[in-house]
Amino acid sequence: MLTVDRVTVTYDRTPAVRDASLEIADGEVLALLGPSGSGKSTLLRAIAGLEPATGAVRWDGDDLAGVPVHRRGFGLVFQDGQLFPHRDVAGNIAFGPRMQGMPAGDRDRRVAELLELVGLAGYERRQVTELSGGEAQRVALARALAPRPRLLLLDEPLSGLDAELRESLALDLVGVLRRAKATTLLVTHDQEEAFTLADRLAVLDEGRIRQSGDVVDVWRAPADERVARFLGVTTVVSGEVADGQLRCAFGVADVPWALAGPVTVGLRPHALRVASTGVPGEVVERARRRDHTRVTVDVSETVPDASTVDAVATMADGVRPGEEVRLRLDPGGVAIVG
Image (cartoon, rainbow, N blue to C red; front, side, top):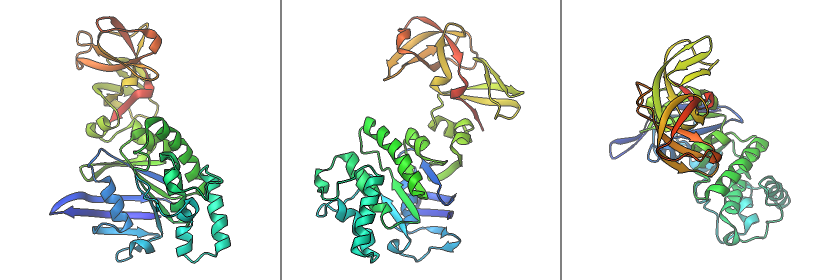
């Protein structure tokens, strides 16, 4: 188990990470999620031993202060992979085991095993300069896993890829991490990536961990409005929960996980859907997405604590600015804030 206890990293007397504390259990994937510049990569580098820091980083209770990077038993994968250009694929993957003194035959078997794991069987002799971006990141992951690290550190590993490849590789990476049973810390600013890969989330903002917990729990109940906005909430209204049901200006939704009483309701765009019945409003903006239409709707005449809201329609709805629509509440996009 990794334990990070009140770690602070300071540059020129300005804290980049402040009193960060988190734990990662064996075999768990924790996503450190936050906007660019929030201190995510700095915290990862401090855990790896690449940045001087105060506080403590422990593995199974043993303090790693003074333990150099190469002796921590951690594997690192960065955004650009950082493969050795003068080595072929097998040479890259075999580097760690060779440094450990693993016999040549065992190294070859380990390389073949990992290439099978990441979906690149038969690529041993391929030059890394001939690989696509997705293939290079798979090789970088295999290289990091080759020495059997006790912790895998992934720093924005998919952010340099195009959207379609990033989505595909994220799904593949889930299977790789599960089959390898790799204890993993993933740094990302991409919510889809975090939700796809992680068991738990820690939301970092301005150098501080604002919230951590199970992915679903954080998604449903962000700690405050700032976290909620980062997690996709665009509209905040008041509401009341009773007997597992939320009532707010936009309707009623089942929220069996929420505590009873007055609540602040966070609505993501897909919490409000264009339908035949619901709260009326006028479309003021429209933007088509790959599989839906995003609309901004003026509801100022019917909802006292909201002027315009974001909502979604199907591509077949054909809504246009100036048209009147009705909005139905969808519990899948509802969050209870605070």
